[in-house]
Length: 226
Image 1 (cartoon, rainbow, N blue to C red):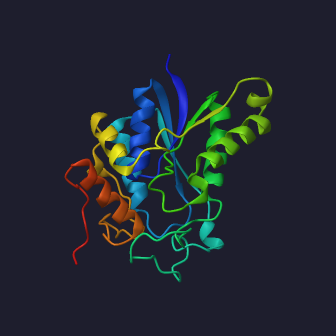
Image 2: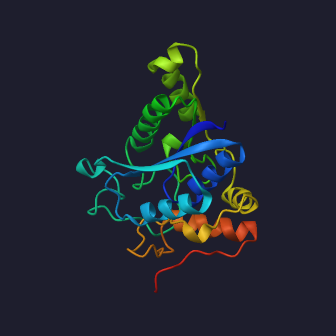
């Protein structure tokens, strides 16, 4: 029998590649997506498409309202999404506590499933400066998970897998292409329209486009009309 793993799936390029990697390693994947009050639900529709294309044992969407707090351009429409290029520092698109909440919910489901493995597509190279995408953060969360759960206390070690964390966007794309990921199904834009058309100007769009160019792969992203 294949081992169960919980895979965080946003519907973007990185998480789709992460799912493909988990499947290629022989895991039976239970995908978890989140409606956390983000600007659009196009990425959730993309997550559904990715699951149908790549396959998974189950796909659930969890709702939690970070828009109640705001504090990010992705959850507060009064804060504009930057479109002037990737800048140093932590950008306003950082969503406070998002990855911590998502990983905690994945941890809860993993315990129920009897899974010892959680996959997350965070990246510390092309990551726009988010503090919760760093190796130190992933290592700290894994330590906490093994202290805070019955499984961990009873000696069944839980592992947080971040297989993309040291890869460039181009390397991620090449890996996904080898595993048969159809990137036209994914949505990475911070302010995509209802059809999933990308703006082409936000940090996520720029990193994605640069990744396809560096990988020598045609960009399949549908862009909104200028």
